[in-house]
Image 1: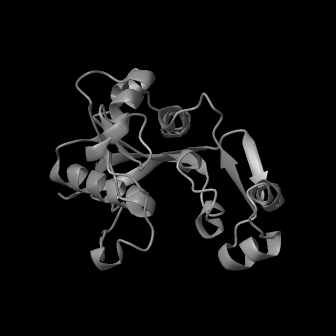
Image 2: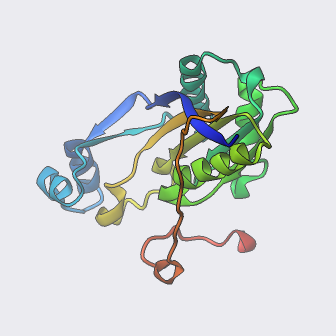
Length: 209
């Protein structure tokens, strides 16, 4: 009988600091950049975003979302077989050690639980979910925690009003469980087009730092 991955629990977390569009208008004005709530809303549909506190790391946001998802699923961290964390803003430069391993430690998940990061920016959570689904379908793992967490506020270019108004910080998580027979996640299909890699990027070359 086929094994499917079903969503057993969900959780999310947003940092306390909430910035409205007007807050950003005033902040950008200090840098000599003009924008407006109308300009931001009509182009993005965004009215507000949350920023992490100075002491909050990506792993801290991820843990809060993960704890909520575990509670929703009615399990604890020691029940997990695998943790996959999607992020482009890891706790450590180069993702070493992986933020997933940091989360594993903070959750108190047992050492037999595997953990790794996935980096696919905005599509990261989808890639992580598809990866978890494949592992469950293969029978390799039974209970998988999938997290998407970012602290994009740390890498924003405050001199570029076209991008700095788009991103915020937060985390979301799901617990996937394998089950026989009844379908959960029916299928996934991933796609990328690397030809457009220069449209949106973060400056910097870690090999020269």
